Amino acid sequence: ELFVWEICLELDSSEKTKNQWITKLRNAVTRVTLLLTHPNIGVQVLSAARDHGMIGGEYVWVASTAMAEASAKAFNEDGAMKPEFDGLLGVSVYLDTTGGFYK
Image (cartoon, rainbow, N blue to C red):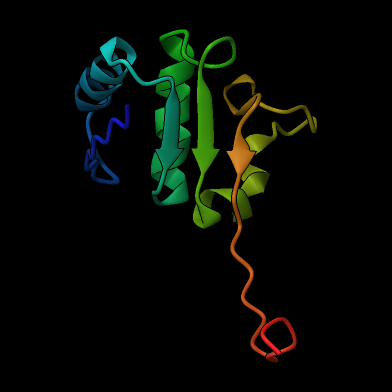
């Protein structure tokens, strides 16, 4: 069964709004979430997911190109990966504009 749920968060959404959204997601049937979002919002969503026990285990997070390309946000100053990025799958689209792939 495919479950599609769209949520819009503003860059300056309140903590209460983010926590309400992540609680609804935690209570949903789905355990695979696709983050099609601005990297700053994605980081906030992943942090909220971590705080609600939704990183690792039975949860999978797939990041869009914007999140995948902002991988520097996944690391602390000491170079260690932040726990909320553990197991995150990044998808980055590549389009061959030379026509080589399509010949």
